[in-house]
Image (cartoon, rainbow, N blue to C red):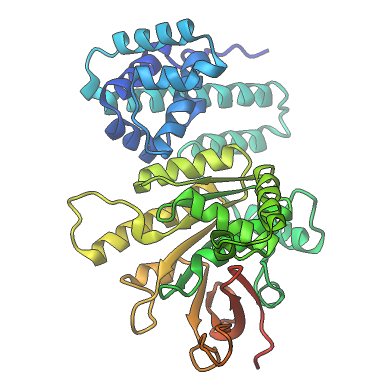
Length: 430
């Protein structure tokens, strides 16, 4: 057997891990933002450090304050309080200079790359040990390709075509694990592919039903077996919960606020809320920066979510140094695209239409989106509530497919938006 020297240590330095954890405890959000931007995940850490960092990521995504005390409180129900408190204090003590957190991240990234290189070297040693004079040229080529791939993904023509063939085969013979999230209405399913990993914008003027439609999409996804995370940056949790109850039970929330409603209606509403409690969905209401949203998306992916909904783009917080609205939306749009690329979840983002029915502020949104759905109230086809119709209006909303990547777009369908139960339906209007 050919004897070869080994690359450095096989593990990452726990001292550097602890120092970075300590920096987060001492400096909070700015360190977490840098970690998220650099793609630091829990698998960069080992043992207790991995547990602590995973909890910090979740707290950061929820906009919660992070220090050694708050992290210990969050972990206390599932871990030994004395042990985790002692470990966090060790991390704080390990952090001699909190302001050097960027250096700690670089050192961790370097050690991670070293570990990957060591693992690759072990694979190459096996290849060399089994090589023969007839196969040595091929083995050398594979080794060269392997080292090259450590810096970037080197795809040859055969791999390129194979990836396309795999996708075609998946479409022809979908497996039980393929993500094919259905839309809530037949016309959309007939004209759009199932959701899988697209960046989708649902746009509309105020009161067009964007949030109600997003909730309907979430319910449809969950009922089809696809766990969903919903970041409500605008509406409080109770409002989202009641709207979802109204759609599922077909109960008008306003009826529940009036005197004299039959007791059975309240009971039905409560039973529906119990049903929702057991559904595979997670709804949160908290202000988020782009970095916190990124962290929220990573946590969603780690916990098995297949769809991420963000309501809405306007409420995503940006650095105070960005004061120009156009620059602000360019900043957000770029990061939403990166989030889609890096995380790989179907991502539905709610956004506003301007007064000229254009997507507000940024062409970058239209360029980066895979699908854009526009909702617009059709006043001519709608019937406004009045004394003559006993205050029973009928709202017709035009749903336009503004963009569908690699498919036809530019056509619309009229849906009925039943505001009493906040539900979109196929409309009989031509």
